[in-house]
Length: 597
Image 1 (tube, one colour):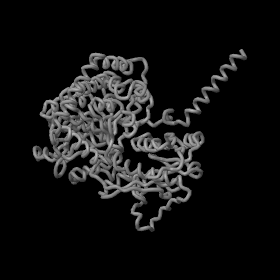
Image 2 (cartoon, rainbow, N blue to C red; image 1 turned 120 degrees about the horizontal axis):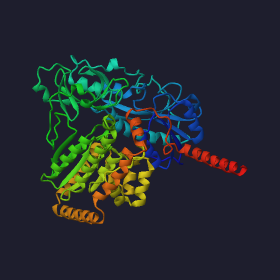
Image 3 (cartoon, helix red, strand yellow; image 1 turned 90 degrees about the horizontal axis):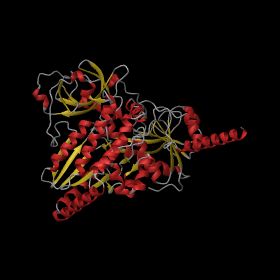
Image 4 (cartoon, rainbow, N blue to C red; image 1 turned 90 degrees about the vertical axis):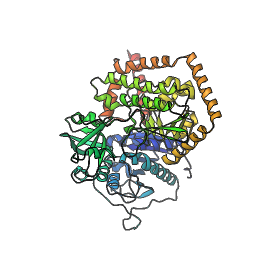
């Protein structure tokens, strides 16, 4: 795609710096554009941001309300809408899933007085996949949006381009205006809805707003459902909707023709609860029989597994698909045990596959918030993450590949760095820093893992930057070894080819493993892993138990999804200069006052 003739000053107006906004930031800043971000808090803040930054172009990756007329009348504002051309309304993907659309798309349109009704700058389509809304958003929608926005930005730089008005008389325009989907339209009729219908309704509401329902007499919202093809036979008399089993915090409910696993729920309490593993959110249902899996569960499409293992061509593939990439204390320890079991099998190469949406985002802030002592649970969770990392680092007789199909953040990035070779899909976005969570210091042996890859100076810059890195940028900096793959299936196929090729060359593999053991022994002699861990945890002890409550405050805001009161300065570069000017003026006034005295 042709790049614009000159770098642009681009302002993002967005409800949050979500995965799509981060990907667009990576793509545009990587092409030399100056991108600044403002959270859409209210009209006055938005107007001020535009005045401060004086952008050439405004892009809205993720909005929940209209852009003020004072802005779009004076500036080109491009809105990213997760719908096909002509689709209008706030529930675009929800309706697409509920209606079983085979094809869907993303449209980049110019803001005007009609919500989602402006002129069309670019559009991209994609085949729909049987998946939850959040998964489609993070994969197909994000890839389509990235391509469409880059095309629109290129067109903005051309004097001869004119966007096309939205014309419903055009037979090529298949979309239409649809209202906000209500809970009445999402409601599950357990006595009538089959498994496919239940899945479609819950998937269309994930990760927001969820499906309103009731479990064990408790009003709640449901999230993240998976089909179960076997267990229903063991409970033939269970009425549809009944909880028939539990596993790793998920609840299995009977349907008219089978069963579904529901992994997460949120209580309709007062004040409302936050999202938790379903059995944790609804302990009233936790008496259901346990449907346990072995420490190393083999991959089985007939049931739900958040950890699954398979072998192919002499390579072991360990999948771990934790909801939103969050790993609780129990999750970390189960994954550690699964890895240890995989390393005992007759394979010399193990590929850590993560999940299709996320590799890992580190410790589980929601389960920490729900604990009797969040500080104690924070400590237990980070210790468990360190135990997992230590198990991988100590595995000297297996070659470990980290295959990052999805995004990663905080400790999840450093978990990947425990591997011998770190690979990522091209579209993956990494956030290798902790500071955004109340200046959390972080552990996972990052003070060992990061400098040995990028050097001390670059390690400091990466952790202090607090901005996302694209996979290509991470590879260029040496943070990861390589990135490739147009999409997750393409990436996975290439990873499998690389891993199988390595496994088929025993002499080369033996040399790699010998070098790995020698390097580890040398590093251990210089400074033991235990020392790195102790130093990191001493700093984290202050985060969890010290006088500064910043981590606990930031975690509370994150878990309860409190609205933003301001945009952080590391995102709002247009406000940094204002802050610096104010600081200079205050200093000058103080000096003048001192002189007068």
